[in-house]
Length: 452
Image (tube, rainbow, N blue to C red; front, side, top):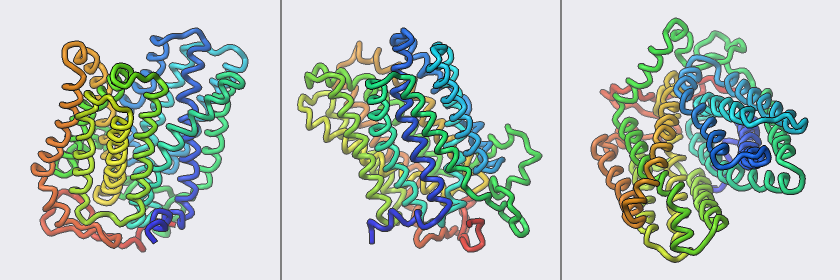
């Protein structure tokens, strides 16, 4: 029965449509990651040109992710998702056509990467906000676990592998064409989503709903909406301290893993780029396996404790990576890191969808996304200079121990053990304790909620 629990969201037609389109789209994103690299090389670019194209995508995400959250709370999430996928299709198809005709230039790739980044900034808050509208609460954990399982398999493994085959057998332009085909199929499937009735709309006459308060927000400013989302986050301790922990973990972990781990592979393990890629794949496999396992069980009664302990304890093995000289020891550390991170992310996504009020979910999700991305370039920029003056062993030691300490601090500061007992999320019902005051949702009658 536990294995079937992970499949329960598939009983809902709207979810089947959404996850099918998402799976195809992220497979295409995995192909794009490889196709883009070899298009840059094909055009005579080097590391500098490649970094500029990649940075353009990151800038698009970071610059627009907060706007994406506001849009997800103001406008119909279904239409936002379809619009983003249609834009992705137009961008990739244009790049494909230019490449096949021999007219493609580097600035086309940079501009395309930027627009794709902007699209991602609007897509993910809308996706997070639409799930509670098409699924009952008890199926959200399984849905988030399914996404956590599919993403590393399709985006980090299958997509890049297929793109590599196309590049080697034909040319980068044909790999880009394959990406365009993925987005065309995903766009076509997304148009099968039913229009969602707005909550409280009489008879639900085919209006898409953007959130329970979308009508009330029509006259408010964008700045007001942003302040409302930030204010709710600051006033909600479990949410605020989890995001603060995320800031610290990104700052201390991303740089060592992305920038310094290749030198651990070279200098301590005697490996090359293939070994580095294999180690990252092992971390991805750990995340996928843990996501699927988490989706197969009920949401833990001590959900905040399990989430923070998973994240905190999962970084401890990284503390020894800087002094390890055995491949399998490093692989085990990265597998544990990936698995605990994946399990924690499934719980985290479910908590956002079940405890954040529907009309704020897009903005809070975008704040989470922004926090996760904003300090990544800072961490990577600091990792190199730090390695010039400090031994790798010390850098990984600090990275692997700071995060567990901060996880413990966050749990105490936000009084998470007491909070999760006061707000149980069992049997698909959210019960609001008297005096909560933070806007968490109370008991919801899903029969009255706007689902198909």
